Each structure stands twice: as structure tokens, then as C-alpha cells.
Amino acid sequence: MEISRLIRASDPKPGAFTTTPKGDVKLFGPKTMDGIKGEPGEVLKTMGELVIACGLDALRITEVQPSGKKRMSSHEWARGRGTAVGDRYGA
Image: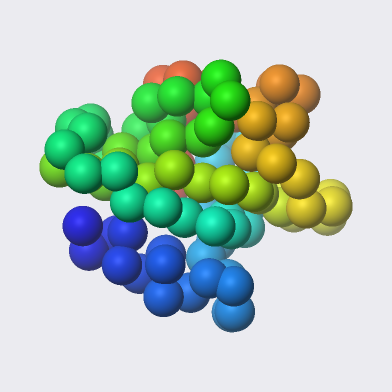
């Protein structure tokens, strides 16, 4: 829950950034999803939405902006192989 508060507090300015296996990414439009468990930073879903585990809860991310690229929907980014289920963010 602490991670979700931090990201929501940073949206939209100054923005929440994280590291991914494909490089740095800025996250936009986080929504808390209660009761979804996973290792903190683990990508749980990419089809239709991006869901990232925060331990006891998860975040649904609406849009992302990869370093040096334009802002796009998280689904569009995942479809373009920007991320995959099982990737770890913030590591």
C-alpha cells in the first residue's frame, strides 16, 4: 500500500519513475487494486491494462512514458513488447 500511495501522490507531477528490464519508465494514472497479491514490483497483467504488484495490493497503470519516447497507453506499450507478465520493476 505504501508504494501505491507514493505513486498516486506523484501523479501527474513530478511523476513516478521506475526501472524495468527495458529501461526507465514514467507511470501515469495509477489506481489501487485491493487484495491482489504478488511480489512488490512484479508485473501481473499486461492484456488490456498494466497491473503491478505492491505486496498485498496492486496498481493498475493507465499510461506510461518510456525514456526518450512519447506517452502511450500501458496496453499499447505491452503490445509493443515494452513489458511482459513476470517482469520486475524497481529492481
